[in-house]
Amino acid sequence: METSSFGNILIVDAGSTKIDWCIISSTGEVICNITSPGINIAIASVQEIHDCFLTARETLNQESKPAAVFYYGAGCASPNLCNEVADALATVWGATHVEAASDMLGACRALLKDSPGVACILGTGSNSALYDGNAIIANTPPLGYILGDEGGGAALGKRLVSDIFKGLTPTGVTSDFLTETGLTKEDVIRKVYREPAANRFLASLAPFIAHHISEEYLRNLVSQEFSRFIRRNLLQYPDIENLPISFIGSIAIHFKDILFEVIADMNLSAGKIIKSPMEGLIEFHKYQESNN
View 1: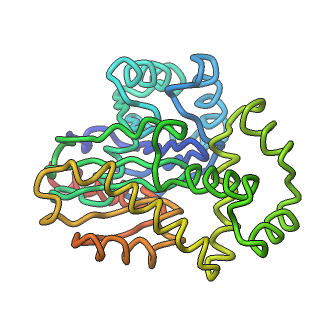
View 2: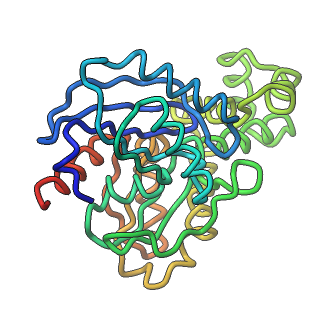
């Protein structure tokens, strides 16, 4: 990757909940940055993708037009989808060089740079990858919030509301939840089954869990979900016991003590935890620049 000839570079970290856009110079200086609503390429229409990119272009500093765009996005799970995104970016931004890749590769680069290890995302959803320092060599498919995404915010929220309305939570937790959120069973059913972005709604309940994490039930809920994430996603990777496991995402940050406890209990090694990939991605592309 020869970034030195590109001039200004646009780095895009596109999650389902929000997108961070950052234009840097060839020396890594941040010129301008914004945050916009998220998008998942796997379920968004071509028009929605184009509109999302166009809105960001109109908001960012127009005098800092990038010559290259590096996009790391949720839902970029196949070459065809990555090509669609790259085409839309090229059309909207007019850049001479565009690369679109998965948010998982972005997490690997942000967390590990050129070192081998396991990188994980624990945000609205969850994902993981075995990284050899250059490329992803294994990836357990996350399968989304209905079939998978163990340990992510949507999984935590789904478990919480299911337990509450089935009468499986302690009385105090149920009372606090209903009072603080104002949600009824009918509200939850409507938001999950009739309104868009059910995964974001479910993940929006994670702050309630964090605020009441001293409750044994909630602490156990989080611990169990992290155990499920590791068992169902990470233990399939060869030599996992000898590799650092690093994390990106708000769920990993907010519940890091529980996460580290679970990792230690399973005789695995914890690496680093960062909230957002952008700082690491800027460092990665600066590193690439200095080595070209």
